[in-house]
Length: 518
Picture 1 (cartoon, rainbow, N blue to C red):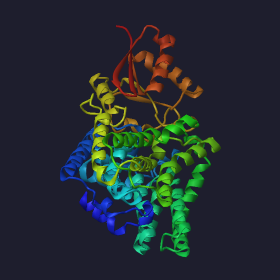
Picture 2: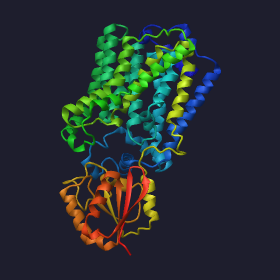
Picture 3: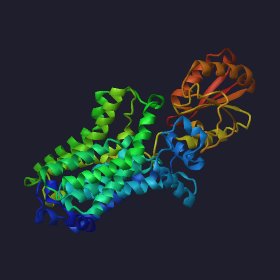
Picture 4: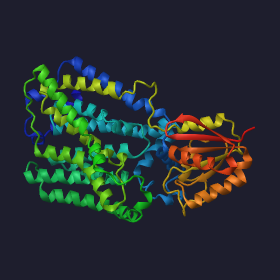
């Protein structure tokens, strides 16, 4: 903690928290025992919330990551979903799996390290944008968000996106505070990488622009308008190729939509108002109970711009885009980059009631609550995602299906539909990557993502020519698709006397076995 505070102090600009940095604020670190207690609770949180899920089963998109890493971004089957491989992220799991082998933990290691780096930057940003003692509270406010912890064990680009967004804002704040060109370079480089991590991160650029405009308009930075315009112009030029690629993909965005148009209730839930209001109300009640003196914190306009923009821009922009275009991209993981902003907003709400010398006491109480409520103590090994493809594939192996037993396998990817999908679609492909990382016995028949007349025609032909004579077959895939095809096959006359049973449970993965009576 002392090292982090020392790293913040030399670059601190009084304008970022309304000019209320005082000696009491900087020195109010509390007893050494509180530091040790906070470090111990942090270690317990990271162990329980981040490390234990590392070895659990992949979910569908993570197996897509494995496919891109093992087959390369140029694999022909990725042409049906060109947006998938357009990320600099995939270079990281490629390195980690080469060094450690192709395991779940190796694939997820880059995300774990990225979120650790993001936590450090959030600590520093809270100290800079709110008050120096608030860093610890902001860290545990992040850990109070399930979506934030989810990124640390997810072999997907979102953790890297969070880290790069944190770094971009950190360098921007430092540059506007110090007017050093090395900080301007750091901002330009990290901001140019952000959109290359994931195409849904574009709303963060609104945060950068608004924060810079507020600082420039208020004149509380030594950076001039000309220098700022030059840096942002260079940034714009660096992003031009990504913009052209995004516009090309926009023409066929409807083919990749996986969510319905969002409602206002969904938007409200995305803003994490419960955490923000809860932090403020709890701090006020504890302060009243302990008779704390009034806090000196008053937010400045630059702080409000940074925290509010980070918190609000990603969900609001994706909500409006989804409603206006009809192509819904309002998916939790797409705006998970906003979660540190929500954590900082919660920290700012608590700062109105927590005096400088009581920050660590308040944070320790909050941290213990986070560990107690989010630890999933009813399970020994909490999973990363409610999808146990590994156990489902293992169960198929234990059934001793043999290489000839038919396995009906609907694709979990929306692009697997006619005319792209066909009955002889190759299994060694992105659309069936869920079958490759966890292999199992049996002869797989690829089915499309959703029901359609061509799919039913193929299923009817398969029933007559293959399944009825096999004596046994299995349906394997995501829950809604397996349930549909289970009911469909049960209604066929060929299987009127057959028995079906469900293996599992495996979370949202289903395995149903059909067997002809002896």
